[in-house]
Length: 73
Image (cartoon, rainbow, N blue to C red):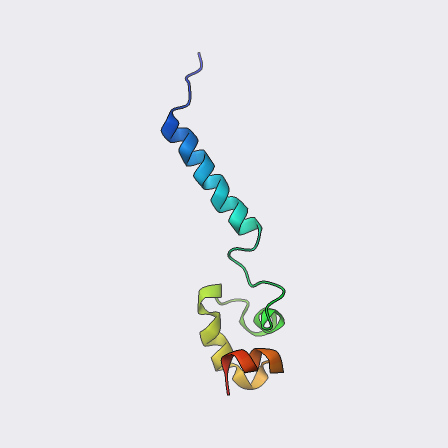
């Protein structure tokens, strides 16, 4: 015997699907168009994206010119 899905269940499924789509589209990753994407992969990949700025400042002398312009000197 099957039970109908409640409205709350449908809303939860839709909300979670949106979160998954945002993540899949890069909502939680360093965008490849960012001037610091390569530097992030090379120097800061073990650091969560939200803490990348601190990592970039720590490695300022090793950053590419474009990334350095955004985060330093």
